[in-house]
Length: 287
Image (cartoon, rainbow, N blue to C red; front, side, top):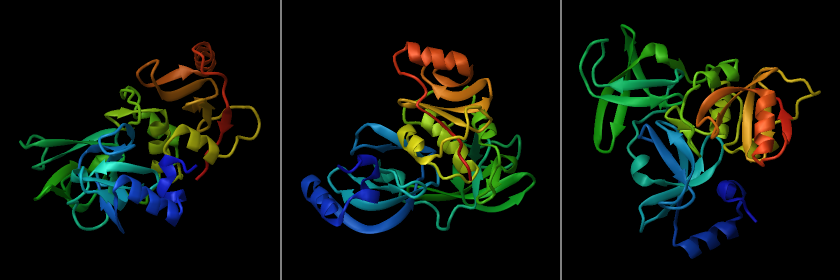
């Protein structure tokens, strides 16, 4: 059976045609659309449960549309994760590919530049992809379109990094999000889960990474030997954590309801005691 999360990556032409017939979908020529909201849910079905999230400027390849609900069905461009998204969240992005991403944990876009200038503020999460037009006096002017409105907004330049310039320490990226609330299926600095924390850190470092912890466990090679080092991953059934140092994890978890550091030995004992079993894999991602 095709994994729902990998439908567009794995389904046969016959399977796609059958799904379209059963669910009343209109198949369309695959088109790349980018999200226009600061964060939006990628769902299991129209108006369904959140499975992952997309951030401003991230790309979804649209392959089918449900005309009754107004939702679009496709797959993320970054990792080919299939899901549904409200069409209102993806159409109308400025022309041109994003040039920069937000590297700070959180930033904002506002309607005027300058430290003390007035103006409306839109929050931005780490990982948001933006089209920078120019930069002056520490502020990057970005193209911003939402709905039928197009305007320029301004983002602190120090919060941005050119797309294609990779960081070299995924744990350092993850640690910027310490204190971020835990959110099942979350991928942003406003709420994130364990696999979202792994993915956002990997992508900042140019490391391919699927969206969910079981996919990540299957994707990354096992670490040689038994010793832990910074940048390793530990997996449990339904959970994943970064190794910050040989004694310490950093992970998004429901116990703390946040991204937090935790001693490795204490986490292993706690997770076993709550009935989720032992560590199932010790992996070492590489670029």
